[in-house]
Length: 123
Image (tube, rainbow, N blue to C red; front, side, top):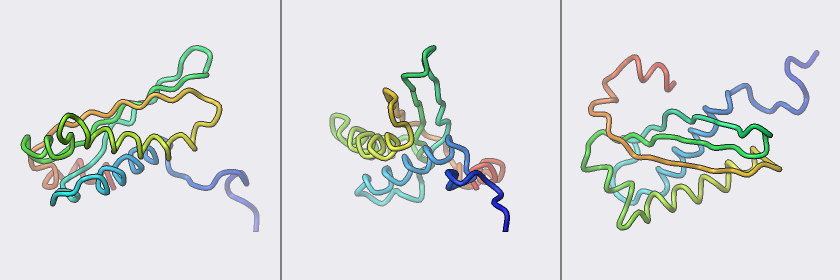
């Protein structure tokens, strides 16, 4: 049959969603304590410089409780640094020939798993 998308297109997911999923995967794998299902990533904001040679990505890793932020960030920032480095490697493949900057922040959002509107957005 006829192709519905250009041949070089391998997914119909928005770029921001794909970036958020990469970060979430690295966060889940990077956290050693019982936390993975209490993590979601939001706001993979993309900003290109005027020449289109540089891209800045800012994303927020959300946990349910303030006390969980420290688990993700880790001692002296080691946890978030590992997550960022691992995510950077995969995201880099999406932006060849561009300078990439990845800024990750950790926030808490109590009871986010009971928020139907948010869950609908994430799914």
